[in-house]
Structure formats: C-alpha cells, structure tokens
Image (cartoon, rainbow, N blue to C red; front, side, top):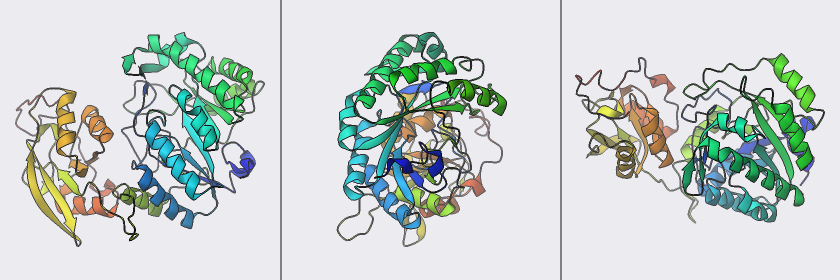
Length: 425
C-alpha cells in the first residue's frame, strides 16, 4: 500500500490514480445550513449528493465491476451522502468487506467528526489510512451560525448548545487519529459573511492538533438550503485565504468537491455507464452461490390520476399503483391506499412502511419533508411526468428520468380542485 498514491492527499497523484466513493451512509447527524441533499444532478459535483444509496453487499458488487473498468483506482472512500458515523454499522461493514477482498486497497473516510470518536480503534484495525474531518469553526459562536441542529446521542439539540460539543469532539477525534498514525485532512467550507474571516484561525488551530493537510472549500450555492442566498466566493478571495492558511498547514488546492458517489480520477467527467451500474446495484442483494444477483424491493409505486400517466402530486394521491417488471414486461400488481391526510411527518413514515417493498415512488411533485422521510427509509422519490410504462421501464433499466422531467412544478391543491387535503408536501 503506497500512501503517496492517494489523489486527494498528494497533488502529484491525482492525474494517475483514482478513487471511488461508496454511498452507503444516507443519514446525517447534523443539518448544515449550506447543505441540501435532496437535489441530484448527474453533472453536479458537490458533497452530499448521490444517484443511489447502496447496502454494504451492494457496494461490493458495484466495486468489483468498477475495478474491471478502472483498475487505476487505489482508494475506496466513504463520504456520505450523510455522515459515515451516523451510519456506523454500514460504514464499518463496508470497510470490513473491502479489506477482506482487497487487502492492499487504501481506505479513507470523510466525516463531520461528531460521532467518529468511538470507532477510531476500529478504523486503525481496518487500516483506514486517511481521514477527512470538516471543521467550519473553532469558535462555538461562529459554529452556531452554520448549523440548524445536531443529534447528540438520542437528543436533537440547537446549534447554540451543540456547536461547543461538536468542536470538542472534533478536537478529541483529530488528536486520537494522529496518535494512531492516521493521516488527517481538514475541510473548511468558506462561507462568505459567516466564517470567511475565520478560516485562517481554523488552520492555525488544526496545525496545533497535528493535522496533515488543509482544504479551503469555497461554498457552493445549494438551492433549498438555508444559505442558498449566499454567493460562491470568487477565486481571488479563496486564493488569498489559502495563502494565509498555508502559513500554518499545507494546502489542498486541487479539490473537485467530490460527490458521495464519485468514481475515477479527480475532475473526471461522470460515466453514464457507471452511473447506470450504480443505480442498478441499489436494487440488488448480495449474490448467492450461483453468482446471480437477487432483486430486493421488487416494485415501483406510482402516483397517477387515471392510471395511465405519472401525473399526480404526492400529497394529492389517495392511492398508489404498484408495478413490477417480469421478463421485460411492465405490469400492475395492485393499488395501495395512501395514509390519511394530516399528521405531519408521521404520515410519510406510514407511507414508507406501506411502500417498504418498493425501490422508487414516481410522482409529479413532492415536498422536501416526504422526500427525505421516504429516502431515509430506502424509498427513492422520482419526479417525472409521462407514460407510467416508460417511467417504470427506465427505473428497472437504471436509466435517468431526466427525459421525463416535470415541466411545470405545481403546488399541492392546484390540480385537485382545491380539496386542501393538508398533505404537508
């Protein structure tokens, strides 16, 4: 294992050696005001987005196929789309499997640092050689401006209460990682008007902790986030910050703000073939002895007004049509009633249970809350309009729904005659 081949930690390696991020960690324990994980454009490169979420077993099938296509990959990483240690079981199982199957592969992980502490000894045992911690403030008063909430154990706390706890845990984790000889990179998101005049102080503090590399990441505007009004800092500003921070720590200046499902060389254009592979792998379980993949979540749910088109808003649907594909043919299996309107998030949790055997729910519109609840339960919400048969066929083929994108998004109630169901969508 040559640690110099990690493309993020060594600029000289990023044109030669690739990395793959396995998206096995969907949940997050912090809501950052700059982050919105509900939007995914295949051509958009930023942390927190992925086209699919895999189980550890599915990730191994995906990894094996990718390595056939890209043998120059030297690093397997986990970077979300949530936080790896808000999904510790999936993260560590994936690393265990990779280490057994590919003993010479470098392993790395990127975390906010809130919950990594209890697992550092396990990371050392698995020979995870590179860890990235995102530290956006070393002053709790500034950290409190950056986050909406944090989950500390079983409690959800305010940023005013959580910012100090987060910083303490980050510092403890970095110190523990360095005592075990693990390379540590610090990511700091440069947020104009929030922490841009504080980033150099972060670098200074991280140098004292023994961090190895510092990455000033310019904020990327995310539609739907609390900070969507902020503009991306210009290159001159970022260059100036890096120059000052560079007095304390070596700087990473070739970051491409990787997705949670990034694969290949840094900056390499996404591969349609590999993206389709990723999407198809999320519908597979661990291969049995025959070597054939087994379908899980075999169905697709559809919100439709008349049964021919995907054309109904999630909140308006009183029932969902359930489809399957057999021998290449799409057919309806049954119709399932929607939970009663009202009830807030509980309604969407009930829906997630009713659709627990569905890999995707196709609808012409849905709000952020139901999409998040359903996604966290493994039901991906696909927004599209058009023939049900065509949309369902695309899902089973692992193809993009972009060709069937909703042309004119509309609010709940506009197409249902004003029933005002209180859908919460």
